[in-house]
Length: 257
Image 1 (cartoon, helix red, strand yellow):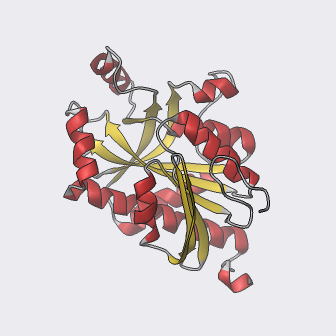
Image 2 (tube, rainbow, N blue to C red):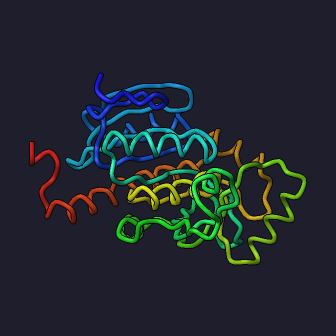
C-alpha cells in the first residue's frame, strides 16, 4: 500500500480533500447513510474510516476517539495522505442556559484547557477555525434552518475532576458556550499545519444538567440529540460542498474525473 498511516490505517489512495471527524466510531456508520458510493476503509483502535460522495464531492470520514491526543494523531495522519480541510462533528455539554438539547454549537474559538495543543506550542497561540470554512458552516446551518449558536468552547481532558461544577460555572461566566475534549487540538494543529478546520458540536447536556444522564441519553439516541447529530452531519457535508465550489469554481470532483 502507498503511504499507509500507522494508526488510522489509511493511504493516499483512500483520501479526499475533505474529512469529517466524529469522535465516536459508531458515528462513522451514521455519516455513511448520507453518502453514495461508500467504501469502508479501516478500523484500528479508535479510528474507523470510510469514504463516499455527497452531491458529487468526495469525503473521507475518520473517527478520532475521545480526547485531544487521539484527535491529533488522526489530524496529522490525514494531512500526510492529502486531506486539506477537516470538520469535527462531536458532542458537547452546554455552558449557557439558552442552548437546548440537540442545538448545534458552531465553534469560533476554543479555550486550550487540555494537554495536546500545549505539547505543540505555547498557550498564547490561538485555537481558532479557518475563517472561510467557518463561514461555510454557518451559512449551511442557516440554509438548513437548524437551531445553532456561534461562540467559544472549552476543550478539556477529564469529566471527573473534583471541581467540575466550579470549573463549568467559571467558564460559563466568561462567555464560553460549551465544552468538549477535541476542538482545541484540532484548531491548534490545523493552524500550525495549514489545514482548514471547523468544529460543529451537538449539545447533549443542558447547562447545570446531569452529565452522565445526558451522555447516556445521547448514546440511547433520544429524539432531540439524535436530530442534532443528523443536523451536524448535514451541515458539515453542505459546508464542504460550498467550499468545493469556491475552490474549484463550480467544478465538482466527479465532473473532473
